[in-house]
Image 1 (tube, one colour):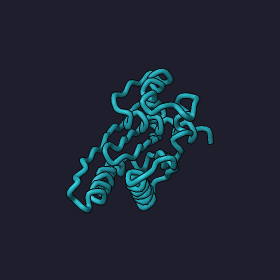
Image 2 (cartoon, one colour; image 1 turned 90 degrees about the horizontal axis):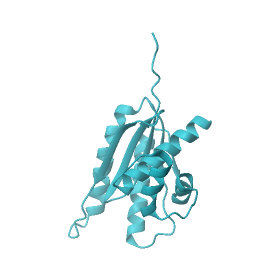
Image 3 (cartoon, rainbow, N blue to C red; image 1 turned 45 degrees about the vertical axis):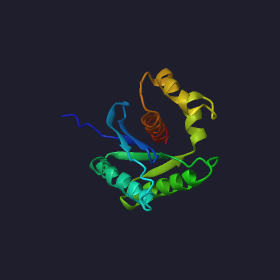
Length: 164
């Protein structure tokens, strides 16, 4: 009897409006695909905190893959971003990292330019062209750039894990 070794790799593209989450196996088959969406409520002083907590709650679905997840890769913070949006995105990014750490996941982050270079060969590839580059490189088609980036992160995680 042959035993199947389950090794999964996860990519998380953190965004308050739509956090992309992809889990793939060693053969690049998508095991889980999710877009965690939240809506901004301008009149709610604690809107950001509630949205972050909702995203963290939705990440609990990863717990079912925990024993087989070899690496979770999250896109790092874009240091070129400015304003309140940048601070809120940084808060989400670190909240996710703390959640991963607290739940015992092996994780790391990759800069946006490194991810773009991995996919397109250019570190300054426009975000809207990443969909096209992913299709050209892996023949996988996505309609959402957050899901596309999450898939790219999962592939990056797998490729770097296997090289070890």
